[in-house]
Length: 120
Image (cartoon, rainbow, N blue to C red; front, side, top):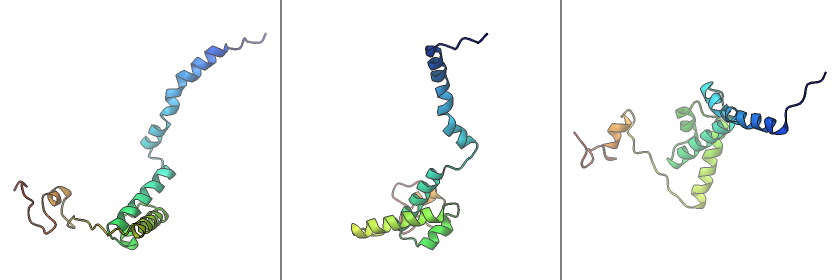
């Protein structure tokens, strides 16, 4: 004797109840450290753009960011270069001194002297 099929509303109820589990897939991927290609691409482009805006060469950018995709870094660097040329923007060099912790660098001026109001 065939089993009776569940009612249509019961099926919808089960699907709605399972929706929160499907929404957690991104969180599960982060916990398992699975690479997300679109995130890797976006981060690489952002790194390349920032390098170009700071006046760094492409080779320096690759060296400073070995985990970033070289193709994505190049694409971001090239996009920022085109944007800067089109809008006649100047390079904004980094104000950090190599080897100085970021908190200490924030308390000094670009010339290396303590900033006004900085704790000694």
